[in-house]
Image (cartoon, rainbow, N blue to C red; front, side):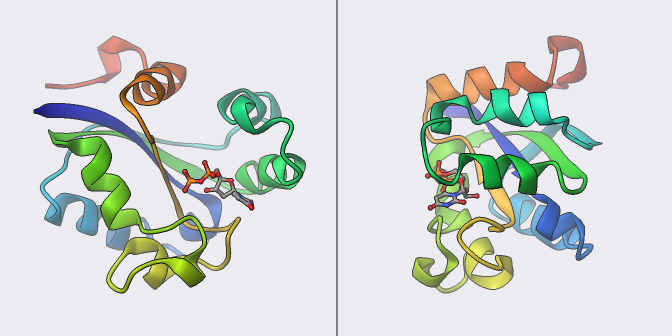
Length: 139
Ligand code: UDP
């Protein structure tokens, strides 16, 4: 099943010039980049994007982190893209992430964990539409 998912390369990774290395892993996993842009999220955008976490104790800190530097947003397409990308990302906490995953190799801690990937088809659709309009998505 060909699917789309939404990815963010987070500020800890852009700050260390890791965009190329992370995108290489994404492409090596068979995921095609069908849209991409580098932006600096506003506080409002970050709060809206993470609204499902707004009651969580880490919400404020997460919003501050996500607005602390540029991020690379992209739409990835491929076979089982959502699950495939989550698998190569690794666990939320890099201490728990499997060897060979993006978070194991690059993440700094549970918050500054280098990448975001949608966790389900409904969230993928919401997240893609949050940052891209259909004219910006190729293929
Ligand atoms: N996060 C955090 N502290 C926590 C859990 C999560 O700062 O205890 C941050 C982290 O950046 C994570 C994001 O909140 O990627 C969203 O959390 P979620 O549980 O959805 O993890 P993910 O789907 O990104 O693995």
